[in-house]
Length: 271
Image (cartoon, rainbow, N blue to C red; front, side):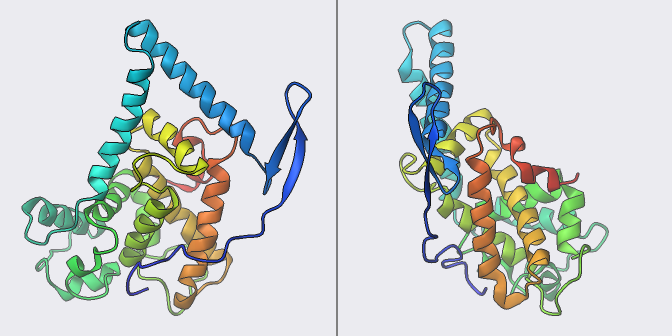
């Protein structure tokens, strides 16, 4: 797990098709247990609701405003993704210090380069070298997790739950890998969604501009649960990540997901 080069790569799963009866007596195709046409219809309905809202607020804006909101939300997140971690940037330095103090309150940090960082699960004494795969947003994700779900954050950081392996995953580096995996899964570096998962997530992002950060927290907690279920060790990390990704994709495509907190795995998080 030295570098988050391709934690999500792997051969595609076998796809199964089943026809289901549609609302008007027709048939729709269910792929891998997912009613994809139904999800597309839901996305179009939600888009229509936003379109109607804009028409009510400004009859001359219409579809342009609705599309603009989607593009603006996605662009804000993409702007965050494009920022590399800069060890000379004062804001980045302060964020790293804040992560330390959130992780180990009451323990003095001796420096931004220190053997202390290994206690958090960085590979060496300089955390900046581990951010290459995830950028500054991976640090923001960890800090958001620590501040908003401190109980779950501490449980994972200190490996408090379950029967643990002798060779565990390093917490901080795993966090960077999770950021990288989510960016790839959601295809967030594309100009607009090119997959059903990407389109579903964009709707959730419009509802909550912190949807990516919350999804990160969900993913980290879900990954740890799968780690325990699979009795995994360090060498199994990529296998666990792939399993976590499949679970996330299934949950995002559930029909009743209207906001990121509706995902079943959100209930694993504790504040």
